[in-house]
Length: 265
Image (cartoon, rainbow, N blue to C red):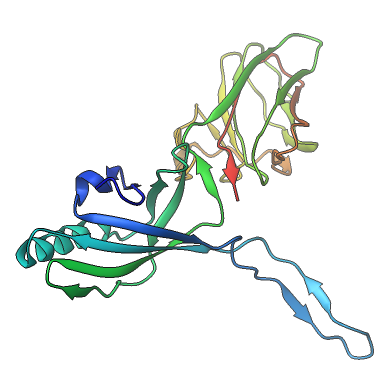
């Protein structure tokens, strides 16, 4: 159908998965759920705010099924049910923003009002608080001896993002190295040999031996057997969407690759 929105869910486009489907409207919450706590303190005016990060949000889609017959309408409804029935969140793309996706799952089972060749219903998706860019962003650099590597990153995100950093050592250093991400220091204090490979994931807050296994930055997957956290201190940093970020590596000569996925309100 050429009327309404086209959506892509779990890799399938609505115009192909269910050609009879018309998505008429898309209703999105302005922000994720506000989960702040307010505590009333005796003897004080007002209350004390304990802020929380953004919660999930919902996307409502008013839809129709338009078919050639009642039998075709029922077949289309069954095809729709089969398509959207998932046990975990999958990527949801709305055609007006084809460069980003939401990790989404149906919030309820959607009651369909059937009228001869038509069906009327609302799809309510529960998503994370932010949309994410389909493409990852990255920057690579090499730290030379005696000079601190500074890799400037230009993040277009509306909110902070967690990068993943790959380190390939070019020279040994028994004292390890320090990586400063957005002004936050993380120290890897174990001995590093030439050609050693390490991945610092601010997504999962882990350091593992070997190069990155989660190229999509949306599963947080890593091999537990490769964890190398015993000599890690400090904190994992984030990149803010103000364009003023940098990742600084000191104490080791290495090739460095920084990867992140933009996030949007």
